[in-house]
Length: 337
Length: 271
Image: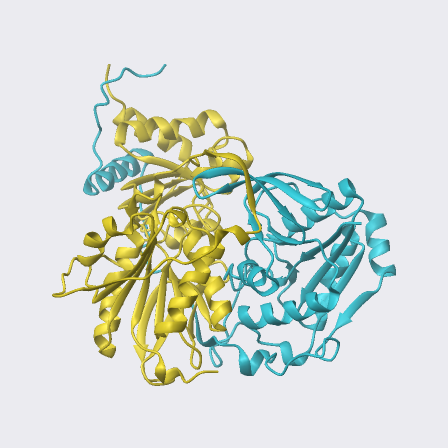
């Protein structure tokens, strides 16, 4: 094991989304990483691998970096596990960063896990907060992350291997513009032979946009559960959403009942929402759903069972028939002919 | 014959989870253990491949001796063999240490074609293991598949990758990670239960593999848990009383406070 005191600086992997723009989550992480770098008096360095990577550098420079290291090549248009892992591993091996942070996305999670294996270091996924502390070692990073389906929060350290690696979910930190003077830019030459890859792509890939949900961006989310009793009643949520500029989502049950498409699920295996108001109708409040709604500023729950667990996480509790209240709301908000 | 391995984990059933206030760790006594729910999809895929290609399927887990019960359940569902990797020295292994132990196990097994995993465990929820095992064994990891076929020791499938749908080919061995709701996991039959107790579970420990010294869950895991806290969600919990009319008036008021107004869509109502 190499000497951990050789490792310095805070690195952030800058994911390029759909080969058109810098992923928002990477900018959010840069802002938090800037604070950490200042506290330990080291540099904040952004790592970019892309096709025509130069076009993204001005955006990245606006978020407090001291330095950008980039590779630009046609083979880097899409994330490729073997190519990205090898190229970035070479950078780690050469420069020895102390901390390396990644967006918690499909590519970010994959890349971070592979790199952690190659470095034989620890990786903490979906971190909710990061702080530096001397409690367990000099300037050690302490990561908070949820475990047991969001029932508990654990604090994890990586005391004796480097880099200290984490993935961070979108919306965890706030991005803040900050321009440093004299940002250093370093281009690293691309040198990967893609002929040795084991997976062959047969035929032209089809661009396939997954059914995207805008739940995570919605200001007002209306959630429905099994308590709505029928598809006809559940459909009324869409009417309410139309009149109030809301977004419909729900629990697992409406999907199983065939009332709602899968991509509108809120919770542990679906979306997390960050709305100003979440209105829950006929939802009992299983923990699998609750973990997806707790980032909402205000939660209103309507359920006829006064003991429904959803009330424990609600700001306003309405004990009553969700269908009856939904009908009244529609009467109020319905656009007159 | 196609050699299929399914990796499973025994996890606590997450109902009324409590934390010991003195030690800050989870109280595991009296908590029922189950097969990690996501792993059931992996098992189902393995069993259906066995039926389709006349294969042989092994369920494997690493855990304490009582994890043998989870393997019995797999045997009851129809797997042919079960392997339990268990040694006090492997306790407290984090993802990296677990991956290193699994690598030793597969290097020892040598003959494997498809290794299948679920997407995430419900206890530690890191989701890292499939990627790390792919690195460790230097075999491709295929995720998010929707059709698959095996021909002449080659694996063909359609998968979603980023925003593309791809048709790909790769040689075996491979790792496949199943996504949730990918299939309909089967139930255990009475005949299955009988068979589960007739079969033997193969035991692997530190000495089975001639393990390198760095396999030591407690001392060599790079990550260390320093604190566990139960998440307490602070909310107002104000109960809105009164008649239905009162409740609705208050609700509309709350919605107004949050900037929610009736919007004019410019469209007539769908009736």
